[in-house]
Image (cartoon, rainbow over all chains, first blue to last red; front, side, top):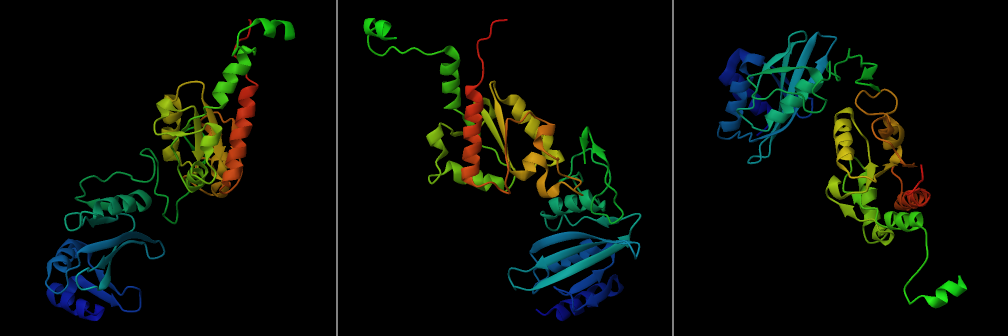
Length: 157
Length: 161
């Protein structure tokens, strides 16, 4: 199905929770209200004709100039071979996004990585720990205003 | 030696204890099957049939408890550093370390402005031989092992105090 068609179905079902459709990005992106992301993902996965069974990638984005954090979900349907991206934007100082772990189990590690590097809190996540950095690391290295420490334990950084 | 040799039966040789022990140590340098980054590919190639590290008595062991040599092949991150230290501590003495490649030597391409990479494995464990390269060719690693063998041959095992 074409991305525009997917957007039309979503905005018909969820109304004002679906904010915007960016056609010229790759893949075309739908911006979704953060409170509705779990319902939208469940719908996209289970609805006949859409069947987005695969969460290919989940990324965090630091939109420092706009005072926002974003999470981007790249979805792929193995059945119908179509792609779409979802984007959720939240306040940069309190970045809370509901977890989609219940929809795709693979989101567990993706969300841990986004938490580790951007400090985005995924509400309801079963095991939200750091995954790449050491457990006692301070700060979130991929944030644009991150200043890394001079020393870690006894080693120069 | 002529007079003495004539009086002994076959298969008896004279040597020093140091030379004999060092010779047996240098020709059985079993290294740990352990790699952290792309240098590991060259390490595998060195052990494989074309370069055949077995010729020098070096074969890989999949546990630190049977290893004499740790070849640190690749980038060591801060998170990995504790694990490397623990693996080194689990090896029985005498034990040796080769730092293979720029990352293990100094941090290499991650030396400047990297928050996550340890700047040289010698910050956590003692290193015997540094092999430069990014990554070093198998010939370079073999030379590193031969250098280590030369170093082992100079060791003193029995010293009067």
